[in-house]
Image (cartoon, rainbow, N blue to C red; front, side):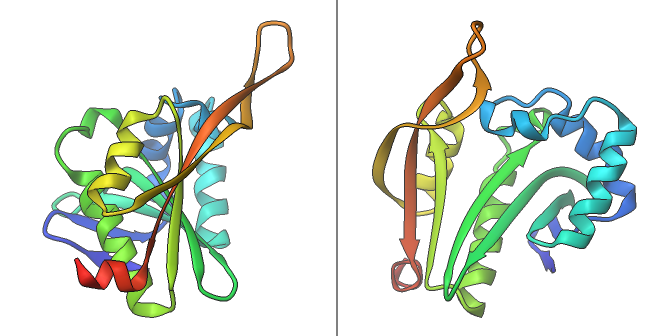
Amino acid sequence: MNLRTDRLIIRDFEKKDAAGLFEILKNPPVNCFMRDKLNSLDEAEKEVEHRSKEGGHFAVCLSDKDFIIGDLFAMKEEPDTYSVGWNFNLNFGGKGYATEAAKALMEHLFHSDARRIYAYAEDDNYASQKLCERLGMRKEGLFTEFISFINNPDGTPHYENTYQYAILKREWMER
């Protein structure tokens, strides 16, 4: 993939993205990325190599520097549904980059083969909830104690409540 917006490049991961990905994932701001936590630049290099081969994950870079500030994912569920998500370096927050990148990705998916796109956001992840709303996605439901990314102090799973947002191609095109 290689998409361009006014300020961003959205492309497949490359070896040079390791330092930027490490910066994003060394201290994940929300629990859903704790399983992706990176503890070293060496781990980041391996993760970039994996993502570059696996597909479905895309580097979001500033177009003037081609430096990674975030990543997007789009996982296809046959025949025509995608699960999408995002994770951005908090040092670049508040500038609309996540909205710009997610909108470009969704536009691309709807112009290829997507009929429906959905995203999950934990009930305490207000930034992702607001992003879903800016993208025109509707809140379809709340899954109570849906998933666990971390453990409680006693070692038992800490289950989180998760919202599901979605939008259909016809809804996207009507906007």
